[in-house]
Amino acid sequence: MNFDLRKLLVLFAAMTALLVGGCGGDDGDSGGDDGGDPLSEEDYANEINDVLTTFGEESITLGGELAASTSPEELRSGVGDLSGLTQSAVDDLNGIEPPEEATEAHETLTSALEGYLEDIETLADAVESDDPTAAQDAALEFQESAVDVQADLAEAVTQLEEAGIEPPTE
Image: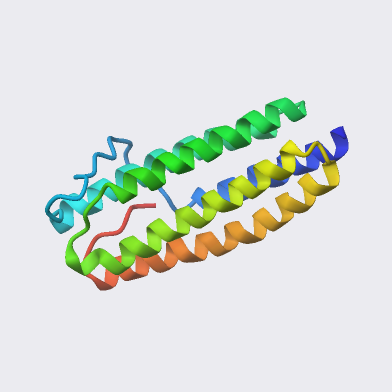
């Protein structure tokens, strides 16, 4: 089990770094407006930057912890933590009312993280099964999904730029 587990952890840590590599800036409160009036372009850019920065930084930390895992229990716990972190990011994004010109980009961004959350949950189920082959297969599928999510995030950045909104910094 350790050989397969170690490969899974290394693969997962590398994939997490790939996914969040484009998220940067300064950390802060996600603070959406919970469905009120749309934010200004500047406030919107700051809000999503805060959410994605927190998500990115914490994902990288979790990826490192996962890579250092030495047992299936630690792996399960780490994947669960990543699921919770991703759910928080999705909830924070859903609490932000974008300006009209950013609606499409916001939907792309939110959908990308919702898809990532589904992929994490699939991986968590495979890890919970205590079947090293199933977990390794799920990790490989998760890696492919992460590339797709990264493409979706890049598309959201392009949509933000086209809307005249400064996207999150790298």
